[in-house]
Each structure stands twice: as C-alpha cells, then as structure tokens.
Image 1 (spheres, rainbow, N blue to C red):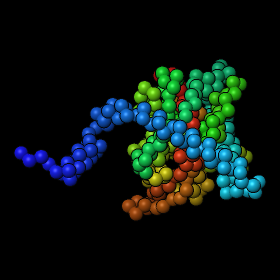
Image 2: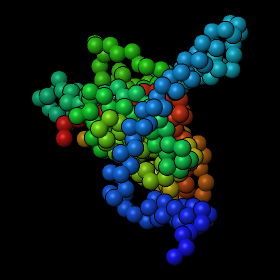
Image 3: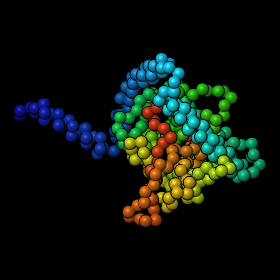
Image 4: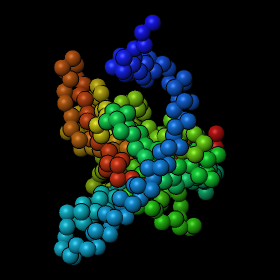
Length: 298
C-alpha cells in the first residue's frame, strides 16, 4: 500500500485532534492534559520579565500624568469603591448570621475558612474558553475543585499577619472557580468562560450606604470575550438602579462578593416580560498576577 502524502497526513492529524477536543468527554481528556500543564510554568518568568520591564520604563517617564498612571488611579478608585461595597455586604451578612445564631454572637462568618495566595502563571489563549493557571507550591493539599478564586490585584498583595480574612478580600472580586487540580498547578475557570454558571443577585447601593439585593435570584452564565450574561431576567434591573452583581455567601464562600457589574440590558424578542443583562468583570483577568483561593472544611 502506498503511504499517505504529507498533505493527507496533516489533515488526518487535524481530524483526529478535532475529534479528541470536541467529541471525547472531559473526564477522558483532562488527565492527559494534566501531563502538559507543568509546561505552563515556563511562561511564568516571561510574564515576570515583561511586567518588570514595563515598570522600569514608567520610572523613566516625566512626572506628568501618563495614560498608564491615569489608568492606575482609575483602578485604585474602583478598588476603593468595591471595598466600600464589600465591607457593607460583609457587615449585613454578619448581622444576619448573628441574628440567626442567638447565643453565639462572637462567631464571625469567616471563622472557619482561610485563603491562599496563588501566583498566576499562564492564561488560556481561547477567547471563549477563558481560564488561567496558578502555581500551587507547598499549599497543594489545600486546593481542590469547586473553590472560588478572588482577584488579589495586579501586584503582589501585602500580607499582614493581623489582617482579617475579609479585609484581604474586600478590594477584589470573584474571578472564577477551580476546575482542574494537577500536582504543581491548578486551572481556574473564569466567570467569562462560556461554560461557567452560578447563582447571583442584582444589588444597588442606597444613599445610606446599605447594599440592597434584589428579592429574587438569577442565573449568571459566561459568554466568552470578557463578557457574562444574565438571561431572561424578570426585571430590567439597571432601570431601577441595580447594577451590582453579587454572589451570595454559601458553604464555599464565607462572605457575599461581587462578580461584576451590569453593563447594559436588552429586551428579549421571544418574551416581552424578560430582559437579557450583559455583565462585565471589574477589570481584565489578564492584568492579574495573583489570586486568592478561598479554602473551607470539606
């Protein structure tokens, strides 16, 4: 039999790759993908050098307000706004729990959980399969699937031994969940990933500083390309001032935190009583160098 030509061999390999990627179940392909995950650590020094060079170049620019400095100030302002919102959410959640736990007024929502700081080593190249890889290091035994990842800012956060858990989280926002755990690294599925799903509530900040959450919950789904969607919402929340998107506290999340904000709304053609809400993260995931991983007892 005559061996296939190079062109034929190329297209055969392409077909096999496509079938493997789209037809086989994830539980078959994930273990094999894990064999190549340590290669992502090779990208870490490159990212560090790029950021270091960028920082050094900034010091050579005169003291005039550059575009990057203006963006940094804007990001700092947004972080302070998130901090106020999250502190208020945390206080309200603590008050609710204290009311439920009569006789246990000293128990705080974060008394049984902890956080790990994990460096980001690589990002997913696909615009729809949005994810990032983190290094696990010596904390590997504490990382497991389903844990929430919270943005820790674009620089290494300062770790204060006296800081409370909530104080470290207030300036961040939820970026996604752990979906794969390998010996040295773990994969975080971002909330913008097309396969991401979670329950949320819309919220708004009242004049007295209280964060008011909508009485009904909603489903948040990832859309890819840096966007999320609340499909078939029963109310046009932005028209009522609800622009915050909050993930309520549960077993895996000690305090309620925002995952983004509502950018726009659009009525549905198939249902005049429902609207689709476009949600965006507080910042680009590509700017992150570290994330917090929320740990809790199994």
